[in-house]
Amino acid sequence: MSHNLVDLGRDGKLGIYAPDKSDTYSKMPGKHVRFAHTNVVHSPATPALSFSSFSPASSSSAPLTPLSYPMILPGPSPYARAFSQPKIVKSARVHALLQSSGPPLLNFDLRQPPSTITSHHKGISLRAFAEPATQPPLPSLVIIAPHLPWRLTVYPSHARTHGAYVTVEDVFRELYDMLRTNISAQEYHSLPSEVEKRKITAAYEQRYRCICGSREYEDEKRRGVRRVDFLMGQTRFMGLSPSESSPDVWLLHST
Image (cartoon, rainbow, N blue to C red; front, top):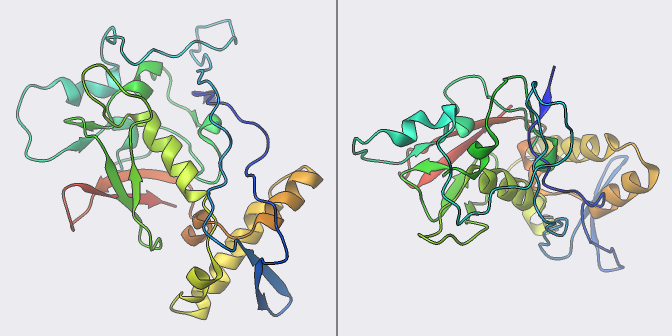
């Protein structure tokens, strides 16, 4: 049985893009692909954060108030043992919830907001989402992926009394928001092959066809290709690993 882990809020409309006559189309046989005239991030307005209760032992489904960031956490979660080890490390290590070394502890579709994250693992602490994404904590993370021509930089969403650092929650939130960015026709046509264009177009069509509501379906279709479509349907989050190019750059794994 899956347990909801996080309720980060959702306004039901995944974007604020209103098309006009200046929109550019890429025509393929029997298909029409829409692009934003300029790069636009279509993200829901950031609501007040809240976490849903997911403990199997809990009988209440009322949302819990999240930890305030200046508060000292009452203790590390069982998934953050590596963060409490006193030995000196030469490079940063990623949090257990973000690791790619084994089966992911969380179920996260990068096309969907973090409020949809679930897990089959019992006992994952809510505190884990407020813990540093890396050890030692970092003020920003750069994420790359094989099929993404962009570098995604994650920054802390909240200032803290003893310095700002990227949390696990920040990584999930920023990945979703940045991958919701529309692409331009120029970015689409700069792809090296027609095979890649067809795969991206297929990912775009699959994404909006999964939407149930007719209005939401038409809205998402009209808003066009997004960065997440460059993953070519491989949208299940499988973790982060250090890249070979730089110790400060992390490689996104998805399937």
